[in-house]
Picture 1 (tube, rainbow, N blue to C red):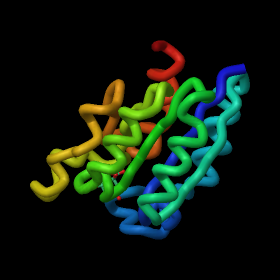
Picture 2 (picture 1 turned 180 degrees about the vertical axis):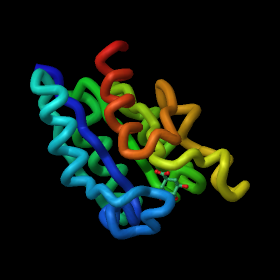
Picture 3 (picture 1 turned 135 degrees about the vertical axis):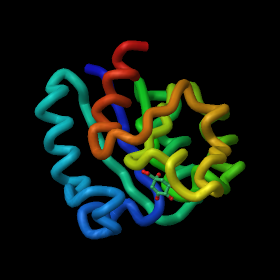
Picture 4 (picture 1 turned 45 degrees about the vertical axis):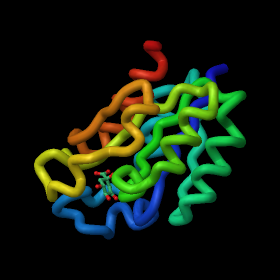
Length: 140
Ligand code: DQA
């Protein structure tokens, strides 16, 4: 059975309550339930942290064993060389995900420091971005 980790960064624990006009009103719990129903053949796990180093530790933990990581690094996308390096350091392919279309938003969101380390990017499809990322990992 393929193992895929959905890894969320800062402030994404507040999905469903946080700026619903941008991120919608679905919780991540509901999203994971839907993903597990959609992909019963995949062992899907979820981890979220607001702490950069904990995201890096998690990438190290799964990055030589899992088949893929769906990573929404939140604002660390735009700031973290350390996350870029962690993605480069592991074997497991990582798909960068964004719920919103970051290119329609503030210019500081137009730069991603992690895209170059990821196999690809999916963004702008709301919570469906996570499903599309799992599809992409399974198609690799
Ligand atoms: C986000 C976009 C980021 O710019 C922002 O900091 C987030 C969420 C998204 O999913 O659209 O926290 O990654």
